[in-house]
Image (cartoon, helix red, strand yellow):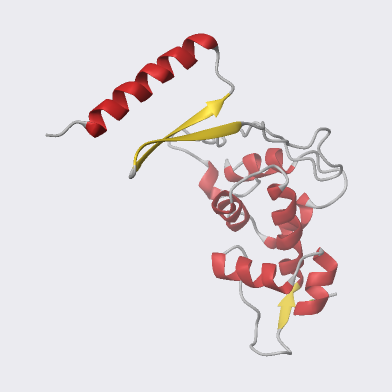
Length: 181
């Protein structure tokens, strides 16, 4: 399909219209070619949505995703979604370093390509989901008020030495805030 209505685009990418509108306002996607209920989106919009979802699975911030997508042509974005592409991160690093044939941006003063951007910890596999999904470490935080306008936040549990130091800190803080100056 060359063009999509908003509903067709959302169905194909498994997102909501609200998500599409948010991505447009964030600069992740260009707006529709026309306004109103009959507005259509190009096929590249579907590619962008699929890549955004894939990069979000690697917990990249939207600003980073936007800069990566903007650096690629529609053909390069389509190539990233093809089966057999090893990783999007590898391809994007290669593309941004100017290693593509005929790319004048890639030649530095010595005629060599600049180093690729710093690699991310997670590698984006487009052909299969990550082996272990990211699960944030759970922690419990305790708020302790030392003054009506001041709180100290502490992650629990604490070891005995840290707990003793915290008790001393809280006692000292309460003393400071109750002193009359």
